[in-house]
Image 1 (cartoon, protein in one colour):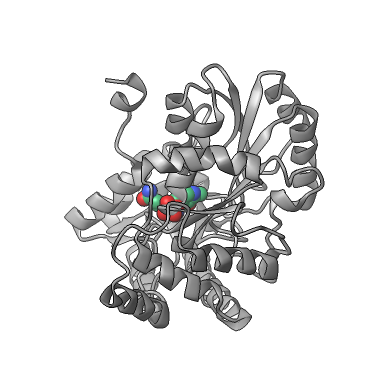
Image 2 (tube, helix red, strand yellow):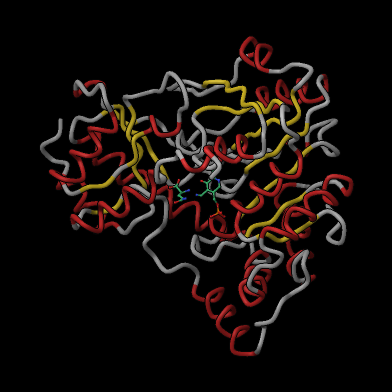
Length: 380
Ligand code: PMP
Ligand code: GLN
């Protein structure tokens, strides 16, 4: 058995969701909305399934979806992607990440990562033989720091893996920080793998900036998106990868032996969804922002300290004023005694963790958020 995987604990998302089910707690832990997702997109998927989109589709994805991806990112982010050579469909962003890391890393290559880290990153980098060089980002801003980047990048750096917008901090990387990072990528000839699954879930008029659009990054960036987040259909696991042809050729080899294809009926439905008018995306952001504000106001009303949330389905509560020194133990108490499941932010750190933040998912109905707030009434 390979020790990288053999020694791993079960993911904090699975553990917390299981505990929520067992205890009957409200699950504000794992990030998924409690509404069923857009009815027309689901109907399109059901129709495609009934019509017979059920055999292997082309390995790179249905042409209709690859074209929709290229058109979608041209419209929303000003990118110019060739659907036939620069777009590939994967089974979720998770497959895209695994494939990119397997395809790009040779044993001994250094990979720059940022903590807080999405839980899949470190095991995948290690299993691919990469040597992680972790740059730790800290609250409240979680900004990049030139000296830390200079310490992490070097002649052996092959890949930098960036999550933007960043889960769990709910922050977005500023243009200045992206330019700083792009400079390091160019100087050290490094490929950037950008996990941008949260790119549409951004609030208060903010606009996502894709690293691939920065000068000198077009040829050295792998951009990853997910319909799971764009349409709140997290179980569908339809992702997409965008990269220049020399990178894409290698990524396609990894995909060929990981999943090979992704369910065609879902691809058909996602292709339809990506073409939705701007009003749909604006409405989605407005609805999530309203839920964010409802939960944040309720928590503040209870005397709790809430960090700003610029993006994602999440907000963070600073539990240091409650005297909490161990966020994981606190979350265990929260779910068992108060009936609310949350995610301890320390789970996203590898070394020197932040232990005073608790992540809550606000992509829930008003009634669910209000019940959770009732249950948290005696916390502060
Ligand atoms: N990356 C990040 C940062 C995520 O938050 C998630 C899931 N929420 C994923 C990747 C996984 O995406 P998918 O479900 O499309 O595999
Ligand atoms: N990305 C989701 C979150 O952050 C969970 C995904 C998973 O369960 N692996 O909550």
